[in-house]
Image (cartoon, rainbow, N blue to C red; front, side, top):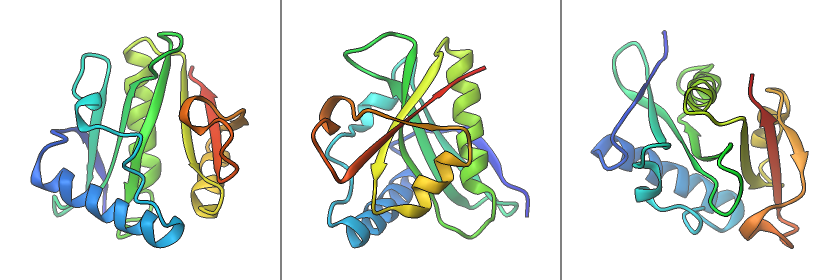
Length: 154
């Protein structure tokens, strides 16, 4: 089935369902649902995007967001709340590509993100898509369980 990605409402029922599933998955893996450093209002601004992926039947099967990285250059977007239900191969890549394209269109030059070291699947996913490990930034400084990545766009 083909996957499509579109900008969406982060407060929609579908968005909330995907975020709850992501938080449950992360909590089972790491003991933390990952909502500490994320506020829904952060992805409703002018230079932010909340996206949902849909399968061929129109069902929401993935999500992700970019927002301005506060406290740094205006050219850095932070990637947040990436998730795929796993039902449709390629969903994660489709969401990431959509968000990177959106970030470039909004004038960002880089995308930064954090994930947990224990999340080996996510670590491999980002490395395989051109992201490089960087020093932990912001709230992740000094956290050995966190690994941060960056990708230069364009």
